[in-house]
Length: 119
Picture 1 (tube, rainbow, N blue to C red):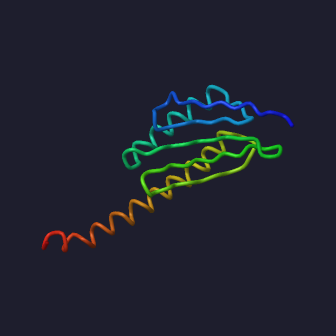
Picture 2 (cartoon, one colour; picture 1 turned 90 degrees about the vertical axis):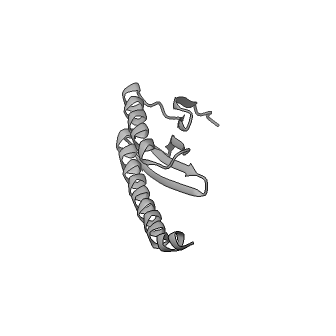
């Protein structure tokens, strides 16, 4: 059984982790992904844990991104040959999930404003 090279990068922020399992991302890709995850982090609820992992999947690469906050989980994954393209796919899916979550959360608060004002 071949042992896969594993690396974890915590340098971005304490809340953001980039894992590479049997995959070596080049520095340009890591820099771009870190920058985009940092931008995404600004759009998310406070105190989120962001985990981006790339691993070997047959002859391709599997990427998955999970974002956790209290009881909320956003998750997306994709398979392909280009890590940057995979990242763009899963980033787009996460952004859509976050937008839906924010819309539902705002609707909930708007529906409950009268009860909060009247006690």
